[in-house]
Image (cartoon, rainbow, N blue to C red; front, side, top):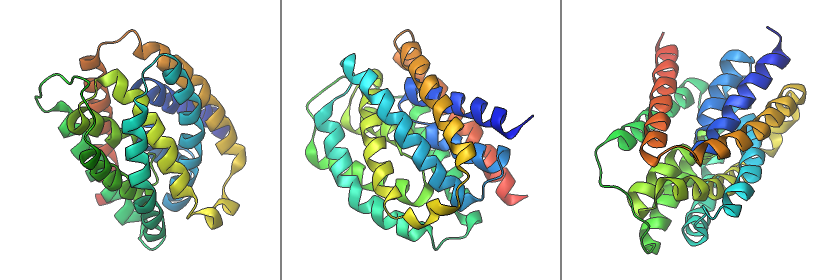
Length: 247
């Protein structure tokens, strides 16, 4: 199968995840770029941030139109995460690829476990600024180091810490993803020169189209089902990457 076809397929899957789940794009894009398209871990994390930022921005508009973005919570998260994302991006350039892979898989597994744990149904309630800012800062640091938008962690945090319903967390998570991705990219400008844009461009294009389909899918699926699907995808990716790094 040609590289172009692989890029289009992977991009469509990444877009579907971002559009329907508000995250998971980076956690899927990074392994796809490494294992399917031959990118190095460092190049894959930079390319992933570009793809996820562009796709999330497009999907954010659709969720905002449907009233599924809680702007106050999202902006608190985003503002608190900018600084840590910048510092994390600097630190990522000094870490070996194997360490990034292991860290990536562990964080993804923890997020999945949190989403699968029994909990009371989330109900939209007033945002507590301190809690939102604290979660946003931690999320920003992870975004900078691991080269993901952070939506796969923002969605569990927005449901479990802030208390948003799943659909509101999905839309709000996209706002956080865009902000964190742009902040992390600001520290990686020197790594963009060696990227293969002939692969990244079709990947991003397919992701944008997939995000529109994902947004329509999310409107037809219950919160609990979205949460379970998201968690199972994270567990599968985490297990694969951890095993690959240890073999």
